[in-house]
Image 1 (tube, rainbow, N blue to C red):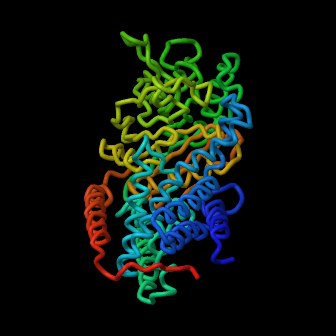
Image 2: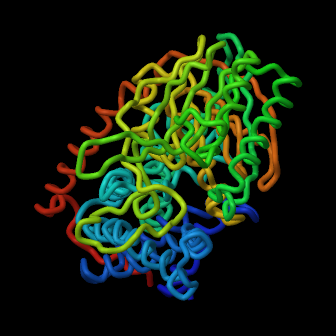
Image 3: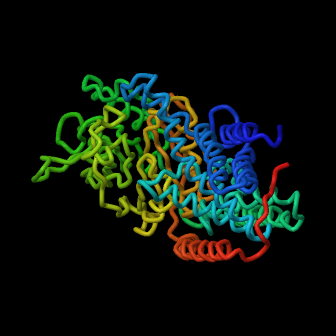
Amino acid sequence: MLHSPIFWTLAAGLGVLFGYANPWTQLPIASLLLPIALASFGMAAPTPWTAFKHAWRIGSVASFACLYWVYWPVMYYGEIHWALSLPMPVLLAMAMGCYYGLFGLAAHLSNRISHVLATMFLGFAWTVMELAQASLLSGFSWLTLSSAFVSWPMVVQAASVIGAYGVSGVLAAIAVGLVLGVRCRMCLLVPLCGTLALLVFGWQRMDSYAETTPAHNVAVVQGNIDQSIKWDPAYQRSTMDTYVRLSREVAANSNPELIVWPETSMPFYFQDDTPLRAPALELVRSGKAALIVGAPAYERTAAPRSFVLFNRAFLLSGADAKMTWYDKEHLVPFGEYMPFSSIIPVDKIISGVGDFVPGKNEQALKSGDLALGMLICYEAIFAELAQERVAQGANLLINISNDAWFGSTSAPHQHLQLTALRAIEQGRYIVRSTNTGLSAFIDPLGRIKLAGPQFQQLATSGMVHTRTELTQFHVLYGYLLMGLGALAVLFAILIIRGVGRPGQNHSLR
């Protein structure tokens, strides 16, 4: 049974289901069953095609275990029958499985080099694979291996130097070293050294961590507005009243200098001077706190459309409630816009939200000493977007989201842990405000302080510290990519020329 493809496919799926964040229980180390299974069957496959096929199947099942929640917003909010909704996560998982199929192919090709080189090569290959997931076809870096270990923050502190994808590569090399260690004792040095490096660096960084800048009191408000009625005009005023009431309560109790409302917390065009937005303006004018408001926005155009829509975060500050904003840059395909709309004659999967266009204003929103780098919704899963915000001068990162779309599935928990990786990479606090949870405060070590449970109204504050220094990740990121590319080319040449130990079938039997 231990040599059965079905057994290892199921083991990898269960490892991902419970290794990544979920509402039940999490054991991060179980996520390593995925690279273990992929490497094992990739190396044992008799042909490159068989290696790809086995790894694709394993990767597809594992991806489905992590992404099963996709059916929820499609069925409940996309007005699509359950019989058509349930295949959606299967199709997405099969597409993501192609990346793992390529990793299995790389594992098969690594038979041409020594075992020790193969462990390092496949670690680099995993990093390249995750970079491809984050970049190609709009990018979808939800399955980042290192995110599974955020609940063990000491393991992932190296993300401040080599990024989350680099840490994933080290974890994959550890897994491959364990696979090959049964045949080559020298290979066990890779998981031993890799584990020690991650833990020692993590311990040193966490032990030496200290705050050297003044604290700022920031509040988050979680309105817990039912997604099914949120966009009904009859509930717009009650939604505003809920957020204003909760904001006044937290302002009276803790006197914050910034209050953060979630993504599209205001289900109307907040930019228009109407009675609907007046209570928010009065809240800012009558208090000391600036206010972040999420709302759709529009801009008039000449042609062919009379206007375009944005997913916008407004900052209101000062006695005059001066308004600045950030428009979401990286949109959700099929949810916020339709890719290839000129050739695909179907509407968006998710109804009730606009057909948005990407924003172009990446500058930090400023309020007093706070320079706010905005990440709207799943923008927080992309390392390069957080990097751009810091490069534009952000000393505090703000993530506003509406994870109500995903109900009580694993998605909000996974989203939160992916967001925590950005805090480690950039050495910045992250304040996260969501409509139904999980709202949180995250420190630069990726430690998560939950502001409250899901599906409850909440208004609470926390202390954060602004930071202006740049992590080593900022300096090394470009060099890391170039180095990975050079090493990939080098190993490809070695493989093609057959340098090293002659090809050999590493049978599992």
